[in-house]
Length: 256
Image 1 (cartoon, one colour):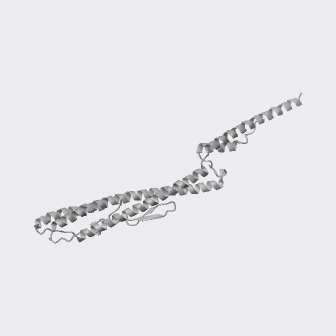
Image 2 (cartoon, helix red, strand yellow; image 1 turned 90 degrees about the vertical axis):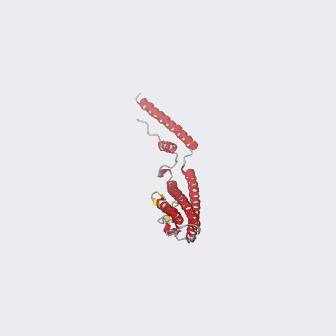
Image 3 (cartoon, rainbow, N blue to C red; image 1 turned 120 degrees about the vertical axis):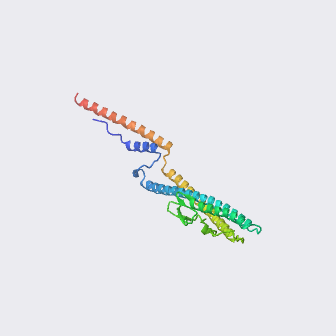
């Protein structure tokens, strides 16, 4: 006769698996309701992590746009300065032509900045990035962000010219107001995304803590349980061997 399988093998395997995986619930048999809750919360945590990543990308793109709008502001400030200079009635036509040449270079600089400022190959301040949706949480809730428009036409300075002698600076002033408004809007949107990011991270942290309390292995407890199970298994093995020895002796006694 052989020794039967140890009765506590299933429990022993459960404790060993929990210790090796770090989770006390590795299959439905370990706790069906707990596993369903853990899977739901883990899905929510992953969604929050993805949303936080989206938010970070949104903030990065807004920072890039804000920096570019700052460069355009510098160009406009220089154009205004040149416009004031060109308003001097003592200047000759050639003098104003020279000033206009620099203004035209500044216009081209603004066009270049508006055309090349991008994030992940998406243009930001040429007017094409309006109402960009950023999914911020595990439910797909999104925030709409706007990067502004720094093209010459949007700023209303395509035809700014100082060669005629009479210079109207209102177009430059209005363009500066437009840029200031765009940058203020970018700042507000960045702050809103920062709040959303902090909320997402805080929610994910609390959910992770809850998942850990529910599903993580208590190593001290499970080592103790494993040792206890090993002791019980050893005892069962000894009892089975003893029983087999007694049966063998009784069998031999019948033939004597």
